[in-house]
Every structure is written in C-alpha cells, then in structure tokens.
Image (tube, rainbow, N blue to C red):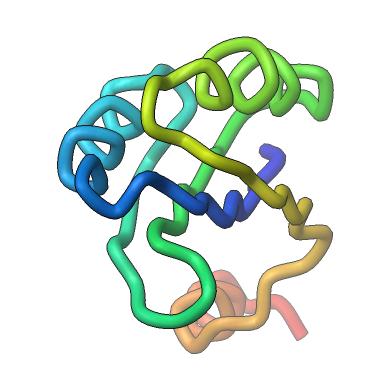
Length: 92
C-alpha cells in the first residue's frame, strides 16, 4: 500500500466544492480543510506508486478550482495505532 499526502491550494471561494470533488476520487481516503499556506490535504492510498500518478496527475489536478498541488509519498508510518497492532501480533 502506497500512501501519498497531497497539499492542495484552491480558489478560496471554491474550497468546499473542491474538497467534495477530491473526496469522490477512487484512491482518496480522506480530505482535510486546514489552516496555513495550503487549503486542503488529501490522503491518497493506492496499491502501486504508478497509481499515485493516476489519481493525482490524471484526475485530482484537473478538478476546477485547484490552483496547485504538492505531493509527498510516505515511506514509513509511525503512529501509536501501528505500534499497538505490532505488539498485539507479538512482533518485536
């Protein structure tokens, strides 16, 4: 499973519509409206690295109201949930 975090800068007047359109895309698991330099964060979870391009470049970037995107590929997760799961399986 490949996880990509996509920072989205959107037309301020269209943020809700852009977020809803992103959320409907296959491969997008969550969309967050955030404060700061960007307007939205989309979490993309796909099977292969090539699928990130299909979601982001081929579909997400073409949504009207998106001004720019910046994509970050996650290569390792560090979360309390992941650690608890590993210990419950008996992994060291």
